[in-house]
Image (cartoon, rainbow, N blue to C red; front, side, top):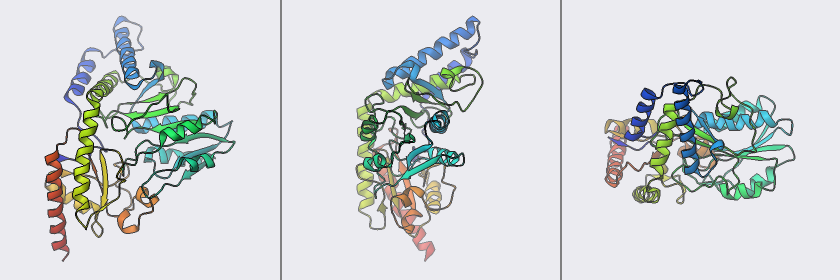
Length: 379
């Protein structure tokens, strides 16, 4: 099997699974319980929070453990909007955000909020000046992803964060789900108020993640109940999942530069291989994230190509896994000003450090064979 759909999810690391199982078996007490068994669980939770904070270079109290990217994004976007709507109801994001961000903003529009969706260029990159020009006296939030999940565009998060320092009443949220462990990001130095992370994109487990929240930020909770997670996320903590997430973070951080270089090298070989073939059209920017490459094969339905490759034991995808069963047009590629034929025939290859170079060569060879077979079938 050759698995090349790592932007959708990754294979859990064995050590992560072992951590989850051990904690679920031995530390199953509720961390909020007052007895000593509960206190042990609470201490493990606190230790995990400190470890995550150290890796991410933030303070422990800034780490809110969540169930992953969708919850973190909704918590940030809706939490800011509902908490600070008395100051203003204008929000800013881009046209190519992940569905968990985009749909959160659309939901807020039904509640009377005004959202500006900033255009992107051919490469899917937003111009920081466009965001600056869109800011109004009633603007309370700017939300921009670090890496686009479909084409791998790296957004100018640092520049955006720097000029937003001049707007102290505007909060800055970054969806860093696809960027974690792939591209540089400094939460403190870049002026990021809220940052979303997910465990299952870094060889952790589904249902785990974190929202990093700066101390000055207040949120309206999506969940009400107990006082867990600094009173912004009620509910009994998922201690085994949290420990597993932090374990995945620690493993990710080991030899990180070599891992990123390995990804970039594989992507470069894949890029050159696709570029040499006239029938394939690359949609990703050349300077994109090291693990994502999007391309189109006009006249061929992505689903047909994906299923044909699947029969060969090769797994790739089309759009975001959260929207891949929606209508054919990729909203991201459409926002990048690509024509209808390319927006409806796009495929996404996404790599992990578990992939090897020979898998890239095998994929290119099998892709050629698949297209030739489909061509013959179509006559």
